[in-house]
Length: 167
Ligand code: URA
Image 1 (tube, helix red, strand yellow):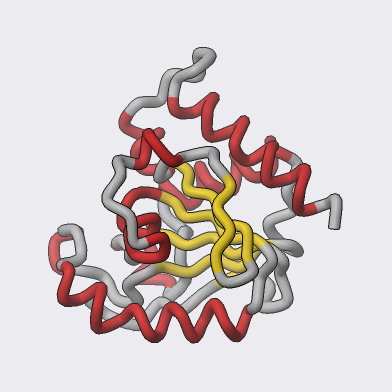
Image 2 (tube, rainbow, N blue to C red):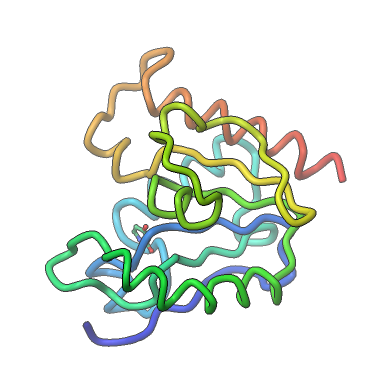
């Protein structure tokens, strides 16, 4: 672990995207979602018509890279959660996308598998929140066929685009 990875994008954004934790590239650059997963996420946002340079702020549940890319522990998440909640309060987005089950479970405090909840809008603390598959999952299952993870995620992001630009 080299550095803290706090966020990237516009702090005035209406859309906040939360990931799990920095990977190797994020650790090198000090910015979230700049590795392979991040590139795929940027591509999906662009395809869905979301201007990620202007309308999105990206951050993670965990601000420093876990050793050997392991999943963050429950203890690490609990220790860092107040920091994430403060970040949400400061950016004050109307919409939040939770990528993958770590972000989903941390913010929504549910135990469901992501496949049950992804794509659904959930209201919490005055914000509209949607969980989507993590882009690293799409990298592992790259098929672009209808109803496969890539296609479902693109549909989810198009749904987000509809709300984001309707405000
Ligand atoms: N990069 C991030 O910043 N977060 C993730 O969850 C995955 C890759």
